[in-house]
Length: 89
Image (spheres, rainbow, N blue to C red):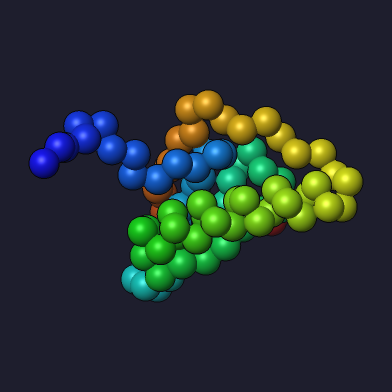
């Protein structure tokens, strides 16, 4: 039996921010590098899974609409934080 000492947990093409909300089973997520990409999940793992496939679909939609697609991030980050309060103007 072989063991991979460097398994890839999740290969995201862009950085991801996951925000906890006041609801314990509700998280929002978005990519600061991929304009218009957002989603929701019921756990951090759920957000990461949805983001992986959602980013691919979002990029395909941008291409279909002739919109610019940012280059993939060679070293994407995942940041988990509390939800940021919206500022009022």
